Image 1 (spheres, helix red, strand yellow):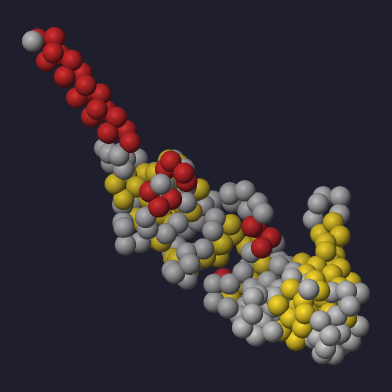
Image 2 (cartoon, one colour):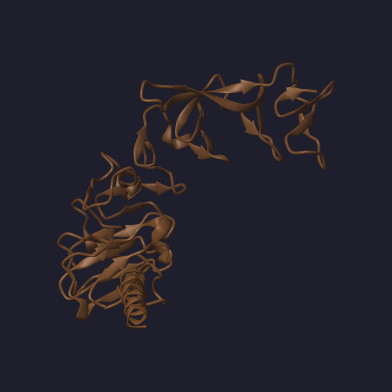
Length: 300
């Protein structure tokens, strides 16, 4: 009997220990479901949506547990530091730190700097800071500079410094969408200049397409072989056309790094551009011209 009691006691101790080590309590469910106390409330962990098994579990270092405050979905502070996820933001001023765009939770500022996630912006004037176009979008500016947060997207988490877009003219910069923008002389895609683009005539189309008086672009790159003046996207499917033909899809020409350098439109062989239209009420990408029917870019 005594042996049985001892065994039960050991099992209970082990079960409690296991429960203690693996049970977390959300700190502020209204503001975030990512920050948790451990069982003994001696540590704070960043656990995305409470799913440590699939999304990870990172302990926040150098934290004063008594002054912890959740600011937004991915921001937390104590009396001395501010954190983005589990990363301590270098030089952040705790007392003046505030969240911008609470619904998105990727921008913040203090009296000295503006932050995208845990990254600050080089030489940015906080007093004249503004979003270019869409509130909380990828492009921000001050009285002298324009910045794109896309330049930070490919980096690992940390305290990076986002540099201004080289030579972008803040006074004339025009936000076109979250990826494209232009000033009086240059067009930009995700913070990089499109060398050959003509800014005065550059316009957006649909489905990642854009064009100027000379060239058609897809995803910021040139689509070769098209007549820009007559190029249109055909409503209701994946087709496009110009005066020379009908097109369905693109083929990429890749560089040594595997990334596309430019695109070539895939021509629909035999299609008559003048009479080519979508067939309504039929399967997606079903079309016709004066002599034939087409599906998925191929004659039926």
